[in-house]
Image 1 (tube, rainbow, N blue to C red):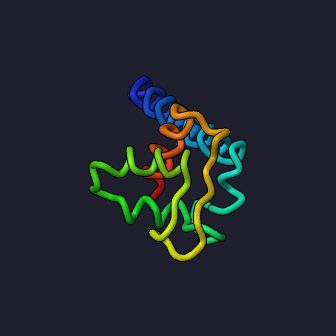
Image 2 (cartoon, rainbow, N blue to C red; image 1 turned 90 degrees about the horizontal axis):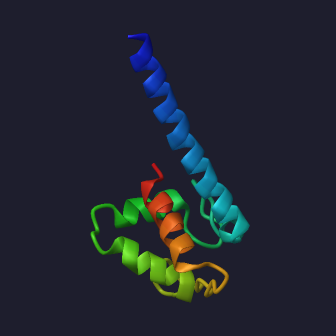
Length: 102
């Protein structure tokens, strides 16, 4: 029983550490200038993005492209600028995290 609890606690710490690391990546890549986890700023909240794309099997690819190249029209008149400073690997990490936000 004690071992099971220790394993569960370790898994939870790793998961929350990973989530925190991805939030830190979002901050370091200036995502938080226009977005937040749970409130609209200039762009939609990450929770709203996750909700909109829930169940969309093509969402990850579409959003990775949008993070890197920018886009417009999906969330209103304000365009999302291109983010050349974000590598494809970083964009995939960010998008996977964003799509997991509850």
